[in-house]
Length: 155
Image (tube, rainbow, N blue to C red):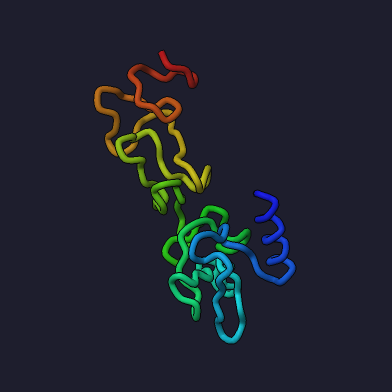
């Protein structure tokens, strides 16, 4: 975290709030006033972990949020925020939310497995999922390969 963001996060924590994301663009310096209280842009709703202050959307209510919740915000560490609710899945950079068990497009050897990662595809070793690997019959460290796996090694 950059020093300026760290200072902002500490200030929000001391105020009883948590920062959802770095504030930038049109939200910089903006705030939301909800139920008579003012919250800086990017602050999580203290009553709903998957809503944040996003003044560009609304300055009078918290808006839905897709991304990583604040620590302890969702029921389990295998949940992320998707459209304002806690759901089992992954938030993949440049793609957004993917539900648990979703395969990476074009690769049956990488899957959203929130028990392993909630911010990246998980690599498989063994049988490919969903009928899998054209021209190959196995997954090895997230890649389709041909051969036999014996004691974890490809033969």
